[in-house]
Length: 446
Picture 1 (cartoon, rainbow, N blue to C red):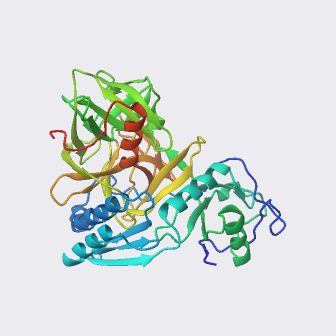
Picture 2 (cartoon, helix red, strand yellow):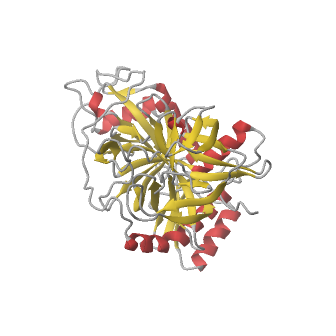
Picture 3 (cartoon, helix red, strand yellow):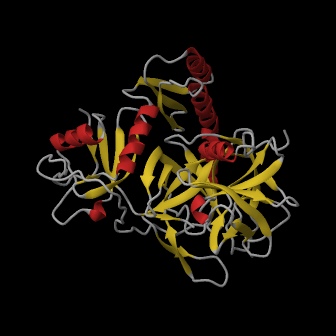
C-alpha cells in the first residue's frame, strides 16, 4: 500500500484501538509556530515573473479545455491535472478509458508542440473529493490531534490529510511507520492510501481605497467595520444587473457595503456561501461594476494602480503560477499552485473548499484586509483569466499596514495562502439566488 509522510518522527495513536492509542471525533483547529518570511519587495511585481507566466498561458488554457470537456460526463474519470511551464505541457490523470472528446483535445495540443502525458489513476477526483469532505466533517483525530484538512492528490491515487500537530498531547507523535499509516488508510479513508502532512495555522485575511466612478476587483471594501478587498465583478445575463464577489467571512446577508473611505455605498450583500467563502454584493442601481480588476501597487503608495480586463476564467491547476491583487498588499505574481480542491477546517469551525498557493520568491502574497482579492493568470489574448479569490493565509505573521490612521502593522501576512475557486462561487450564487441565470465574470458586453 502506498503511503507518504513528510516529517519523520515517531508513534501513532488511534482511539479506535489501533496500536493501543487514539482515532477520536470532534473538531478543533490550532496553530503551529509561525514563520516570518522576508518582506523585501512585498509591494512590487517582478517583470520577469510576469514574463515567465506569459509562457504558461497557452498551457493553462489547454488544461482548462480538457477540464471542461471532462466535466461533460457526469461519471467522468477525470482524476487530476498538473501543468509544467518548464516542460511546456501537462500531465493528465484519468481513471478508466479516456473519452474521444478528451483524446481529440490532447492530440490537438500535442500538434501545437505541447508535451502531454496521460497516466492511469486509481480513483476519480469525485471519489476522492467526497471522501475528503467526509473526513474533515467527521472531526477525526490522529494521535490525539485533529484532522483539519483533506483532499485528493493531484494524481488521483491517494488522499492528502492535514493534521494540526500543535494540538498533539504531550508525548504523542504522528505516525511514520507503514503499519500505522495503513491502519489510518483502512479506518479513516476506507482503504484509500493517505499522505499525512502537518497543517499550519490559518487566518482569514479580513490609491484602491475610494470610489472612482465604477466598481471593480481589487478595491477596498468596508462591511460592518471589517476591511476586505473586492474580488471580481459579475453580471447576471437575465437581470442585466452587476455584482461584486468578495470573501464570505467579511460579512453576512443584508449587510451594507461601502468603499474604503466609508463615504460611498457599493451595495448590499444578497447571498453568501460558507464552503466556497464567497459573498455576493448587488451593486446599487445607479452605479455599476465593470469586468476589470485593479493591479499594480496597493494603497498607501504614491503610485497609480493599473487596470486589467477580465478576459476569461478557469480552474487553477497544480504547477500553475498565478498573481493575487489584495487592495493592501498590491499585485504579487509568481505564486505557485501546490494543491487544489482540498477541504480545510478553519479556526472559525467552517469548512472551505480551497486551492493552496505558495510564493517561491519569498514575498508575502496577502495579509489582513486582502481577503476576497482577485487571484488570476495573465491571458494569451490580453487581460487576465480569473481563478478565484483570497480566502486565508497559512503560518501568518505581521507586516506593514498601509491603511492611514491605523496601527503600523497588521496580522495575517504570509507567503502561503488558500484561495477559493471562481467557478464554484458563480455556480453556487446562481443556484442559490435563483433568478440570476448563470453569473459570469467576463464579457459584460455580450
